Length: 556
Image (cartoon, rainbow, N blue to C red):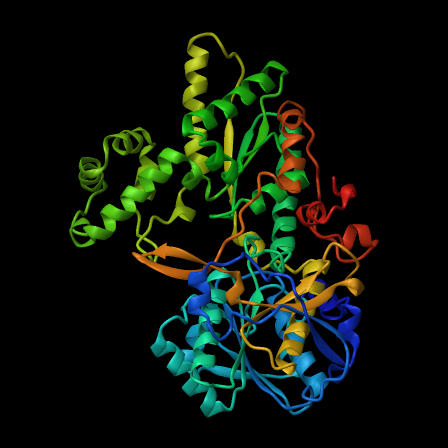
């Protein structure tokens, strides 16, 4: 396999490691914490997890662990979308297992949870994983979106693991994957199985975090990758001085990516879905804000600018959220009939007759292409695929219409030309930043210690991430204590709640304090490409979001 000079150099990078993880595994033990693990779950959640709920979060300290050198056969899966650093988690697990016992083995089940059900795995060795050290992607064993959630799937998992002599499963995934890991852990405890389950927090969206999980891995690299691209576009905009660039970024439920990229690049406008939802901002009011900024900058001779928005913005707008909810209901209840309508015109007419008056009006006023996207194939849950709706095109179309109206009334004599972009897949498999390379390796080593200390139903945690890596505090928290009950398909189901942008939080407040000046000034910040070599403040600093959350005032 041909590799680039950078990949060769990155293979040789040695992740910086918390001091406690440099100790021999049999010299490390757990200290139980008294603090809460997560979201103060309801009595209903406690009732669903009677055997795993009462566990306490832990941290690792020096001490004797007589069971550390017991040989273990551990399985690992990558679940859901890719995030930079996943390979380092796996390598950290393998290194940690081998450090305790050379007879321990790590098995990677291919293509996610479905690989367990198909009994499709490969033993991972130091030699086979070496080329993947400090690389992006999940191509070491592949990922998948099959969900382990039914009793039949749990029974199949137990059968496969017992036949292979596997004693622990590591689920590297997001909130849904780790929710299912928690359910599997409770099931295993209920049947008296000794198989352990440990989760690892992964998602570039940054919405898997709480009191114990400071950040999910991949967020740092993805936002730095997007910020480089945004900075490049901002500089082009400031050079050509003739385009407004509208950039949609990944993040359906939460706007963490958009907020971090705004803090990194200082755009003229950044829309935060959580603020839109909290304030009940309408589509028209959002467009008016954009148009007013365009007009005011034009008065200064600046017919160019930069707008950032999260892909989930459209669901945060009240009237659009209502419309999407009605469409989800209509198209699920009459799915068979709707599938017989072969033209868009017939589909739109049928839908319009069945929507409420307000939603019918909203649907009718949308650009034709957005209407088509709302009626596209549904996601696996039967819902509108919000990530496929080109919200940036919708805003451009409406802004252009409003500007033409102003121009006809003599209220605008400038120019408005636009370009649109969507940044998503560009960030999911990038070479991990030094932070993510270090963090992921630490998560892997932490996972191995959780297994060696016979813990079950936990998610690996590393705290103090805004400080030096040597001072980070590895540990674990019970998965069940991070769950809330949500109504899904008419039933209450336990899920790890997505962490949204807090309007009262330090990152949003830092953004809000600057955005009025950013709107009219050209204050763009150019982060440049991710740096791997050089001074620590350039190469090793984590996201501005995390620094602000942990009181690092020098972040901005």
